[in-house]
Each structure stands twice: as structure tokens, then as C-alpha cells.
Image 1 (tube, rainbow, N blue to C red):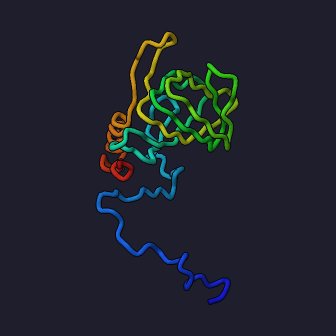
Image 2: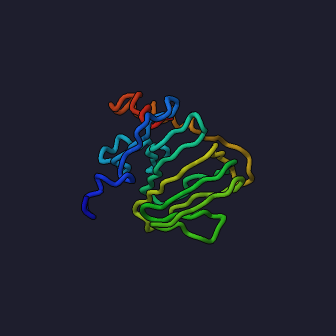
Image 3: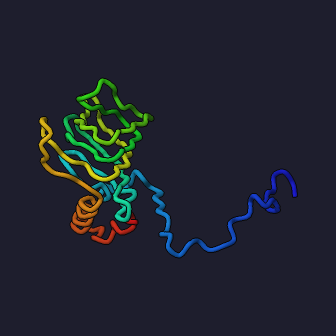
Length: 176
């Protein structure tokens, strides 16, 4: 064995036993930002999401949000935490004085209500979000106008993929 040959080093030996039968398979998405635009699910004017993990068993989803236009996306509240990582562009909330910029991480506390905005001069914004629970859409006074949860997201994907040739079952690869 040489310093460049780890084949005899026990730390380089893979786990030898089967994984638990109840453990679902991993989700591997080699093209998180897909070459095929049909993977992006429309949710508004020049606004799409791309599912990465739709956890029906735990009630959360991970997706990329893509925006190619300045404007207000939505005003909403989260009953559970949300995590975001900005891959491209920038965005902000009307209720705060900070701007989420490329390479930045955002933690959104449960109960927070905010209005997501992409400002003029941002040609494209892509952010990865992990949304736990739901997004509850509200008017400026907090009256509920709608919601999204992992099940509405799955339904949106199924309808979109059924209509664009990928097939309704395309979404199944992201569901756990």
C-alpha cells in the first residue's frame, strides 16, 4: 500500500450491510438547473419552480424558484421554518431592509409574513428553498387568500408534466 493507494485502508471500505428495508432510495438530481425547460413548473407570469424533493411523508418540499421578471411574487406566511440559498440574482422582502444576494443563505422563522420582490435590473433569479409545512398566501391585512403545501405542489407538477409530454409520472422521482 502506498500513500496514493487507499484500497487497503479500512476507512476506504464501503459499508458491508444492506440498508434498512424501510429507507426509501436517495434522490439524485444531476441537473438541478435542467437543460430541458419542460421540467420547470409555471406558478406565475415568468415564475417557475423546479422540484428537487417532494416529501409527502414529512410535509416539506425542496425546489428551485426561478423568476425572469421584476415584480411582486407573493405575500405569504410560513407556520414552519424555511431555508433558502440564492444561486443566481437577488431578491428581497418588502417588510425587511436586507437583500438576499447570489451565494447568500436565508433562514425564515415560523410565523413570519413577508412579500417576495425581485427588483428591476435583475434579469433572472434562482433560489433553492426548503419549505416546511405550507405557504399561506395573505392580503396586506393578513386575510388568507390561498395556500400551497407539498400536496398542491405535487398536483401542479403532475398536471404540468402530463400536459408537456414528460408524463404525469415524471414527478414521482421526486416524491418520498
